[in-house]
Length: 249
Image (tube, rainbow, N blue to C red):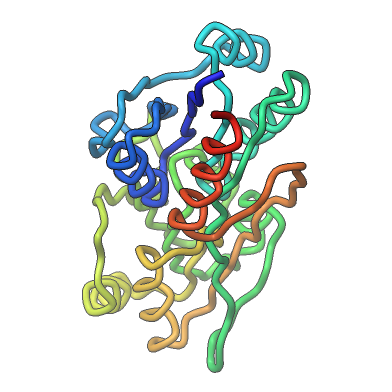
């Protein structure tokens, strides 16, 4: 059976791997959830949108004769990752994961760790001026924040209105340490709330927070397990895919 790869994307790692797969002439399709209205292009044929739940995903895999699943999802895309792992086991389709390295606090960082975003939000003190870099899914939880003022940065406006105490900032990366430093100073930020997504793109805000001595409320990654290998860079994933292509030919 010839190899047919499904690349579950939404990250820079997924985009990089898509061009590697195209250059290597390995048949593959990229899949995006559709959260971002105008995503950057991939180097592969790309489908956008959900699969209709776990059952719909399994049907897609069989209908498209998928022989390998590559999970290059965002570290916090728990539901889709669980669906992919479950389908991989149920249909005996190999799966590999690209899991970028997490950030780690360094001296003199002031981090407090939380298991999820709602708990981080609820822990903000009433006098805080908080900057929320927690993604679009967190907009539903800002109403429960006691902080005096919050600033939520998203790439696109949320579906529902935000409370008066939350200021929406729409902006797209890349950001620099200098621009983040100036933004935090201008807004008189005391607390940064962010998810431990890892990667270079999110580091400028952490570097700025360190320089300004801000409190950082870090939402830790959800834990998960899989029978497939977990690799930290697209190059290693490509090597694994090539090995599976050779084994299947």
